[in-house]
Length: 619
Ligand code: F6R
Image 1: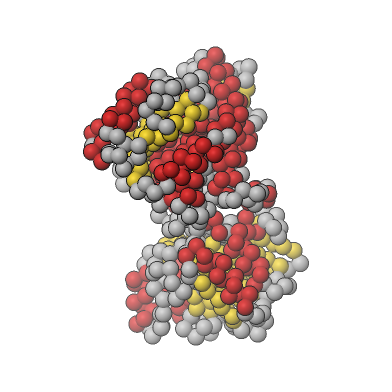
Image 2: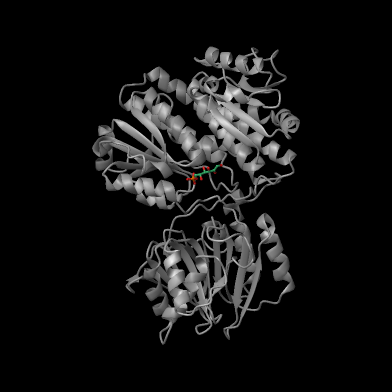
């Protein structure tokens, strides 16, 4: 969500800024812009606001301009205040055009600040909250240097920000500041620096990366980078540990990142499991949970698990809650954005609040985790991005090891989260004597076979593409599932909405007859997830109810099932699993492919879904 890049060095920066923005494209954006400053303090600015084409259009504009300068800041914008217009596009400047900045975050006291600045005579030309920050600094910059002005201005902002600021009076400087929104600094060496919202833009230059924490500033000049608190106290920073597998961010011949990441899943599951499964003992080793004696003691006391997460991660967490209940630990999943308001009653001493997140930076999940920590619950994370905010907040946690997920629509993150949750079930199940040796061994055997079984689902790509083409003009879909397949139905529907913009609802199969069945007719397709498992007969009855309404049916079932062959020509068969709770790892892959090909058949780019951001860093 919004991407910031900045460069201060010994080379012309415009190309490097654009390259950085391209790396951050996956975060989602609707406009893009940059400003470059010469050694004399002259600025050249370029902006484009053409939705998902903005970056391409910005590159065209920049190519046509000279834009000399070895200092610059750039931004991709996902709008919060004001539409996606060039006028609202970052960078923004002060009235006299001497201060320019880019911003990620939300200024919550926007109305009051705007009024105060207008009353003082500032001319505000955009609808954004960001522009106010430039005027606020201008207001403070009377007879003082940029750093002092920034330090005086920031406490007046209520909300979140990552800021990069340059100014004519000090043409060898970028000041950066952070509260909540992420910002990293790469030391390229020999007095060159790159800043960015995500390490993915920095890693092509350097692995020497430092992170700004809340209420910290970085003052970058060609002489070096100083880190300070907002109060001016100097800080010593340690390098952070980052993922360095850069190959992961290339498409490697796939037409889209989303498809590449769907196909990566067999490898991802193997990586998630590597070194963690103790096949003979039917146990699992989760180093992240064995952090210290204190954590170990707390884990033994836990008798309730509350999962907090958003979107796809929430659906993984919902399934996870079924898995914990399966081994006798009371568990439930909450949407992180609702957790604070639903006033859930729990005994913090005996409760694990489990945050599930790909990015580890999702604002709603962070808030929920903060609240749980404040109340004294054990905060545990299932997170993909190494070193992300959640991994620094939690008491202990498990990495999902899915590698960079660039596709805006989560795919491999979901299956890696499910695998970790299955391992947590095994961990607690075996620790507490709720899973027998044989069951533990079976679960491990199934996890080890999963990559090959996933490959068999992926081999059905052409068949699934054809089904998607057949349904590409449908306007609505109902996704149905029961038991472990219910979260899969929710996830399948979310994937379809995100990338193909087709309305889809995920529903519990058994709930269909309590309302949604009224919508069904021959123009309302239904996708049913019905692996042959312990509740198959009930799911099948629900599917028969759909067929009786002549709604077109797509059924995702297992290879051992021919019950639907006469009912519909659109049956996708995935390999069977002995432990039904693992079937979502396979059924969901079929639904990911279906959503992907629906988007492609509708002429859309699934890697650039409109209005979406990869990392949702505002509440
Ligand atoms: C859907 C999707 C989102 C994320 C959600 C949480 O494809 O990507 O629904 O799952 O925004 O993000 P993380 O997992 O980063 O906390």
